[in-house]
Amino acid sequence: MDYNATAPVRPEAAAAMIEALRTPGNASSPHAPGRRASAVVQLGRSRLAELLGCAPSELVFTSGATEANNLALRIAAPDAGQIVVSAVEHPAVLEAARQVASDQQCELSIIGVDRDGKLRVDELRLALSSPRRALVSIMAANNETGVLNDLKEIAELTHAAGGLLHSDATQFVGRLPLDVSTVEVDLLSLSAHKFGGPQGVGALFIRRGLPIRHRPLVRGGGQERGWRAGTLNVAGISGMGAAAAAARAQIDVESVRIGQLRDRLEAMVLAALPDTQINGYVAPRLPGVSSMTFPGAPADAVLAGMPNVAASDGSACSSGALSPSHVLLAMGRTAEQADSTIRFSLGYATTEAEIDFAAEQVVSTVRRVREAMCVS
Ligand code: PMP
Image 1 (tube, rainbow, N blue to C red):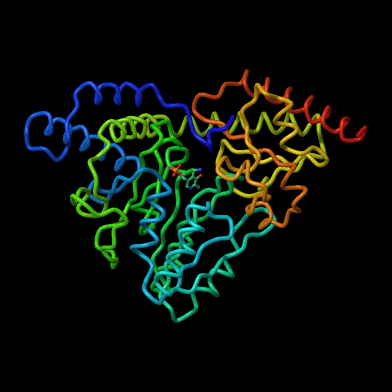
Image 2: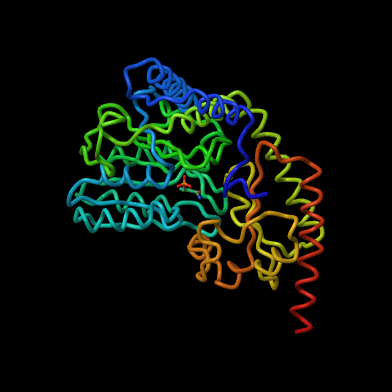
């Protein structure tokens, strides 16, 4: 129940990767193995492009969404302009934005969210009224709560002010339909391992014709039209493409089924533990995500008490860190509430039996932890 940390590799992706590994080649080489590898990369690129509704040539392969976010901010932030991010972005945006703002002498504006995790659009409007040219970076779906942002509206506001919009869509791609020909985002980051591809490969969509600087993070042999040097990860790209094709074929059915499972989990937990707070409950959310706060039951104790349920306290990247979730604090929760919060995230292979098992485990473990807290 931790698909937002990573999803199991889809069988189609594993098969494509094994096939690519059996017939090795460098996609830049002119001989037969190289041409074969290049054809495998082309297929991966066009499958991913189909999932997003873009042209294959608008994709740059990266090592994942962290690199894609760093690259996007670096190339699209205007010198001496403004970078606008939300307070609940992943650290791969927040930290990169801080660095680029200091390197390129940009002002950094951080837009808040309300108690439901919804972006304060009035604050965004205010930031965009500055005469500085803006790069706005707002995620499509939050990794901790699943809360969605209205990228169409944000793109319209940003473009009306003459800015560019980047979106970290890592948790959205492959889970809900997305078409960059209607949602006019300029740059978009994604990662294969969130939708059933392998870890360590992702992409940045860069809309053709954008007024951006050629300022790659990784320089070298000029692969990816100079945007990202280095021998292409043929097997990874092939696996990502196969996962994209499988996700695209099933997205409508999967998203409904997963939403029903998430609702079942929430209903079962709320029925037994009615003081549970579900973060972002009334906001539009990804179908597979539920962020639950159990007052008086620290998340680390609950997770330790149910070793057969793989869920997460906060996000996988920051769990283990001592500070409470910046996402929940930005939503007005206290540190204690944040520390009593568990994120469940479901995906394409989650079953109803798993949901029933998890619900029963959560309820009995939270009760046990609360009793132990009262006694001690
Ligand atoms: N952005 C978001 C919203 C994420 O959830 C993650 C993964 N936790 C990342 C970026 C980083 O992705 P990757 O693992 O591909 O670097």
